[in-house]
Amino acid sequence: MVSVAGAQTALCRCRICGSSSIGDPIAAREMMFGTREAFTYWPCRDCGTLQIGEFPHDMTRYYPTRSYYSFGNTRRVSPLRRAVLRFIAARVIGRGIPASGSKGLATQLKGLGQPWIASVPGLRLDTAILDVGSGEGAELESLAMLGFTRLTGCDPYMPEARAGMTKWGVKLLRCQLAEVEGRFDLITMHHSLEHFTDPGGMLELARGKLAEGGRIMVSVPVMQAWCWERFGANWAQFDAPRHFYLFTHRALVGLAERGGLRCTAHGYNSLGWVLAWSEMYARDIPM
Image 1 (cartoon, rainbow, N blue to C red):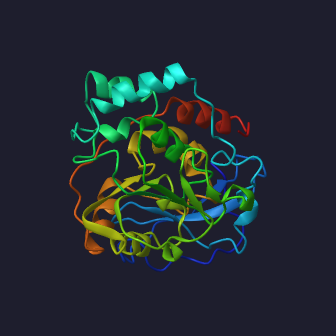
Image 2 (cartoon, helix red, strand yellow):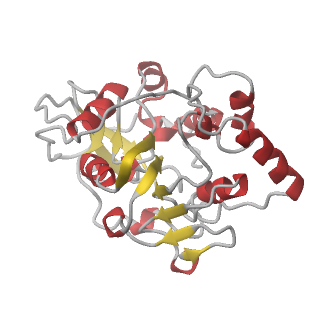
């Protein structure tokens, strides 16, 4: 655990639930690139959310376009593998298979690309999908390879040269969500909501861009007691200062409900690399 040195400007109220019951400050280091800068986070005793005390003035330097993982992560897929992916996806798309505890083909998808497509009921290949915080569009290009045809991504940190239409027909916009035009049947936020200063406002904004009957699917790292007790601020999903918030399940559902949304399903997955890199961070080895 990193100690907090000097005077700290205390967080008076939780930005997620509004509670004034704030715990003691916690310092977390930037370890993805190994700068080891310390950033102060505050825990809410009511909803359990950890949140950064002060937002850095310039976040662009924490998302270097040549080395941040969501940039330059598109990959080539052989025609044979693409055919196999499409065959499997065609049998699970839109079936509403639970995100956790699934068996058979849905489970096999976890090793083949996009397991979540099995958990969204009513999903079709012509569903209009917007991915918020898309990076260079790797998630969307994976969907395009499965046969999805109406795909848009937006990311304010996207390299300028990457914006435009990809060879797979994915529309990439270098902009904020508020600047995106149109309505969408499904809006996804794959590990992006925790990067925004006002996640509640982002959910409300996304809700306003949904077509009738549309859905929002959010993936975020979730605070769990066992993980915190084991790793503390060395937990790799802390990812200071990029992750402004680390939610509990209860906090995230409450945030969505206050924004006029209703949680219809949820699930969990555990990523082996998170545990591995948490051990490395504890040994002062950056990613």
